[in-house]
Length: 437
Image 1 (tube, rainbow, N blue to C red):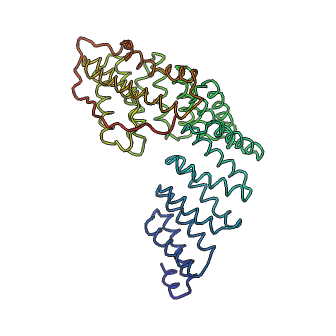
Image 2 (cartoon, rainbow, N blue to C red):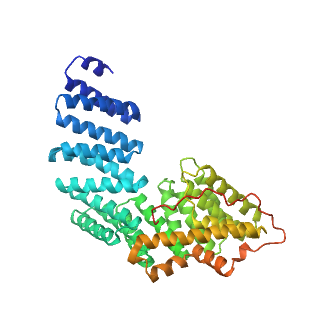
Image 3 (cartoon, rainbow, N blue to C red):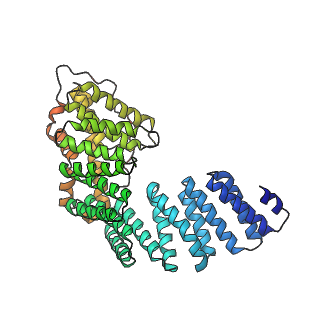
C-alpha cells in the first residue's frame, strides 16, 4: 500500500512496477479480482512507456490469475500475447507459467490443455529445455489417447517423451509415461500390456520413493483388472495402494481405492465387499470429493446389499445416488452401470416395470458409448476390442438381461420385496465424458 502511494507521483515504470508487485501479493492471497485489475492497469502503463519486458511479465501475471481461476482459454490467450512480444530470454520466464497452466488444465479442461501443451512444446524446443519438451509430449499424448484422437500420434509422442526422459535421467517422467501409456493400452483392450506398463511405472515410483505415483498406478491397475474380471489382481493392487496411503498418512485416494477393492471382493464373493464400499461412501461424502465416485460407490454398495439379501439398504443406496444425480447435474456424468444397478434393485423389489425402464436406459447408454468409442478409436476398435468391451462384467450382465432376460441371482424378486416407487426415469442424463477412462 505504501509503495503504491509513494510511487504514484513517480514515472509510469515505477507505478507499473508497484501495481504488478501488488498483484503478485494478491495472487498469493487468492484475491484474484483485485490482482486482475492491478495487473491490467500495470500492463497499460508498461505499454505507455514502451517497456516490452514489463508487458511480458504482466501477461504472465494475468495468465497466473486466469489459471488459478480455471479460465484456461484466457490463460492461453494471455500467454500467446506474451510470446508474441518475447525473445529467447523472455521465453525462459514464460515457460514456468505455461507448465503450471498445462498441469492445471490437464486435470480439468483437456481441450484447453491440448492448446497450452502445444504452446509449451514450441517454447521448450525454442529454448532447448528437454525436460519441458518431454512433459509437453506426455500431456499431448495422454489427451489425444484419452479422447481417442490420433492414437498413432499419441503412441509416437509417448515414445518421444520416454526417449527424452531416459536421456536426461528423469525416472519420475519415465514412470509417468509408463503409467499413462498403460492406461491407454488398457482402454484399447490390451489388458495384459496395460497392466505390465502400469506395474513397471509403479516399480519406478517405488524406487524413487514417490508414494503418490505408486498409489495412482495401483489404483489404475485395480480399475483395469476389475474391467476384465481379474478380481484377485484388482484386490491385491487396491489393498497395496491403501497400505501405502495409510503409511504415508495421505488418505485422499482411499475412497477411490476402496471402491475398486469392494468391486473386486464382490467378484470374489467375499463378505468384506460391503464394508469397504460403505467406507468409500462415507469418505466420498466429503464436500471436496468427487460426486462421480460417490455415485459409483453407492451403486456398487447397492449390489453388495442385494447379495446380502438386504433390499431395504440397497434401495436406500440407490435413492441417495438418484438424489445426488438430480441435485448436482452439472458435476455428475451418469454411466450405464448406474442404471444397471437401479434396474436390479427395482427388479428385486418386485417392480418389474421400473426395472425394465432402467434396463433399457442402461442398454441404450451402453450401445451409445460403444458407438462413440468406435468412432474415436477408428481402426483400433476391431473385433478384439469389441470382445473386450462386451466382456466387461457389468456390460456382459446388461446385455444378458436385455437381450436374453438372464438376470443375476441377486436381482431375483423375493416374497417380501418392497416396491420401489420413488425411482423415476427422468433423472438428469448428460452426454458421456470425452475421456475413455
